[in-house]
Image 1 (spheres, rainbow, N blue to C red):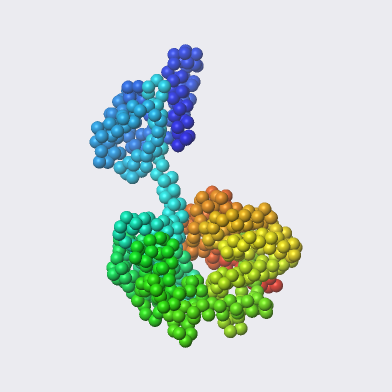
Image 2 (cartoon, rainbow, N blue to C red):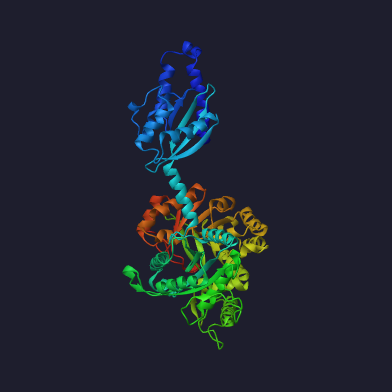
Length: 601
């Protein structure tokens, strides 16, 4: 818009000179006039020049194209009111009369002030009109069709506020809607928060694969929408966790809706070539203002009710009880259905299970039963390996192969994540130091690690001990770290970058990152969550927009979950920088890393 205004000012000055007798007396006949007419004709913006009596002095063809007005219908000296009448007859001002539009525009023109406003045409296009008064009493207006730009802005905004897989609002947008609704509750009224997660989803995901799991999550989102009213707000908070906000809803009605949702989600799912699948749903309910009138408190109460529902033998949604029989433990504690002699509702049973897992994990670390596997990150254009991601593996004597999705949350809740991360860093740096060339190694750290004041000192010591140059180390962290704006976290990120260590943002698009936070964070690369690529052909536009967004922000873009040659070709077409997935190499221990000679370059 600043360019439009600047052009308008300059154009006014040019026209003043053109109209002066002195200029035309000394200018070479036709030379400047021809160049000027060519410039106006080839402008990308429409333009109209009016004199002090609002009579048309100049108009170009781009204006006619924007407003679907044949040039033959316009003439020099035509009044601005007649111009509007022609445009209204074509349908550019739906529902408005000539007098209405003319009075409104004339009131603005008489103020003799520059300004820009947006007009929506009858066909839905958006036109930015920039008005600039001239010194001789006339004025100039430029016209730009900004429809596509607005659509792109809206798409980026939608992506920032919605889950890419299910298209439901994400945690950030849901939090804003919850705060807004609770503000209305303060003025009288009520609302209800439903938290739910899926029972048995992990089994489906493990048995049929991530693609089937993604199909299931999309169907869950569709069933949520079908069972809600127009003003209700469903959201995917992450993984298999969902929430629903019910404005102006009392307890009885809310429980009826929650029951209907639960019954619908438990019906069998058709996953196409993967066959049928069945899951359950645990649901917790909390109401405002009865249970709380603040967002964090209400979410915590619904979360507690969900915990109780999950450990109940009943499929009925559980309403928050301010005086439960036991204090429920944090939901992220790993759950064991056999909770001990006091029954499945006893939170102590889950606590013992979590403590047992952490104890076994600690023993595994001390006895050498933990190891690292490495998966390559490759350049999209050449498939050359640029880095290996270190992945922690635990093969327990009794539990078997334990998924990081199970033991990492328990380690975070217990605080054991700090020594565990230090071991992973030391082992990864030591093994990477023996590799030939400049191949980097990436290590995933929890956002909780960044709240440790001595993290920079710890990593500095490990690098010195192992001899790995800092520029060969990459630290990956999820978007959760962006929520903590404390001086410790910010200082840690800056300190790591000062050492020469790269920071990558992992699982981009699934959490809290937006342009403002990304711009201030010292990341060099973003890893797009695998759900964007797994969305298939229908998600190509969104995937391309995410890649373009990352590049515009100045990041190297890495795509996860590449499993087919078709996906590789798509990423190359979309201009993705790097990629990672089973197509390029499965995780392997350092001693077994093959020389990947990929057939797709």
